[in-house]
Image (cartoon, rainbow, N blue to C red; front, side, top):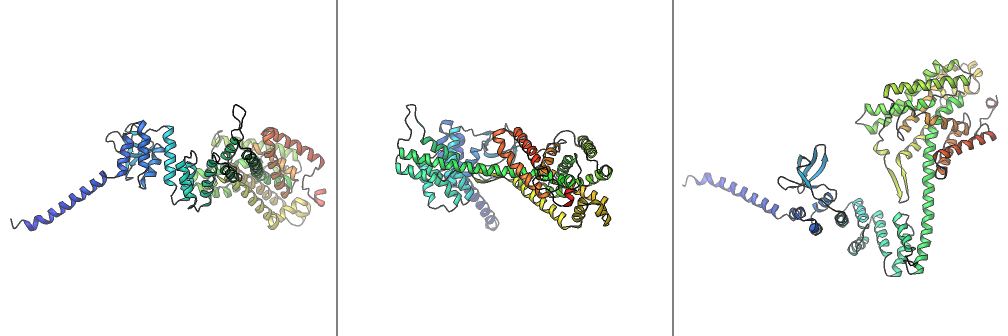
Length: 547
């Protein structure tokens, strides 16, 4: 016996420690209030589920808000085989599940292997309230803002007390504003007249739909013809506040219309600026201009297909690629067809119309007649929310910036480079330029290529607004000629002003006349305008223009 003691003692101690550890783990699992709360929610019948959820929300644990959110989202499940509570995200063959308590990933489960904890609308409303209360003290301001918005949907005295308590601690201006708005909307129902008047004074600066609806409710009458709000001072103050709010809403609506008009104008300028060179400077009626834009749009599509994992970068690759391809096609058209038709504008019109049909059919044969969708990068998606009444879409904002950038770059090329100098010289007096040693044929090809390349770049921008298809260019060819003629043939600044003017005019007319009639009205206006000023808004001056 005495020989066994030195060998058995360490082993016994190790086993004892292991046993104690297992006991501690088991005790911790058994005493975990979150686990017990989840078990109660799982076992509770529908009429007792709200009480179980309310009790669960009182547990002081960081996992509780996330589990309540999972329950609200329908992601809280339990396995039918062993009753284990898990969270699940939809996967191809069922759910990707994880342990609800520890977050440990458990692989996938079939749709019939798990069961969802069902809710009704009343329970969902309760959950939103509870989650809002729990997240109100989050360190993340965005989470707090969402919590306040959730709590303000159906405020009760307890919720309002929590918001009032938070008001003194909150530092984030957006959250602070949301709390004040929620409290002011609640105060509109206060029996105290002073509180109602103070609430209206707070709401006077807001523009949200909730505010307008609540203030309108003060001016409504019941079936007996009596106002729901008995105090005339409150009604008059609410009416004045509504007048101010509606005036601001009209202002923001006007700003939004101008923005959409400028963004439409940017598209028109991008579409017309290449034509301003080929038609305005060279005098060629290029009916294939729209198809050159289409080639730029298809180039964007092809580049995205070649770079499926680099969507953000593909757009920057597509811009020079589209310029190059459209410019090369443009040079081929000029060298192959147009150079034999200089001085015969009607024949260039017919020839380029034939080229446009050829390009459309070529694209149909290569890509099929169906439209192709070009993905928008994440940084161009979504919108900037200025306030409840005004938001600006990011893709149109970036296209507006892109238009101004392309315009500035083209202006610099024509003003400050040798190519620009030669283009201007040939455009003003071809014979004199040729006599001075300028290779006019090469300049013609380069000029047409430049205009065509700009059309390709316009196609890149259009691919972010609409689907890419063989008929894409036809939608913009008439508008492009309209902008060039209205702005003044051969004047880039005129093209810029004309494009933005027609875009804004279209957007202001559309609400009253509809999209089609608005275009017709704009066209009629341009026809009348051209009768008075045949050379457009900014006519060229000098001997060349008068020749």
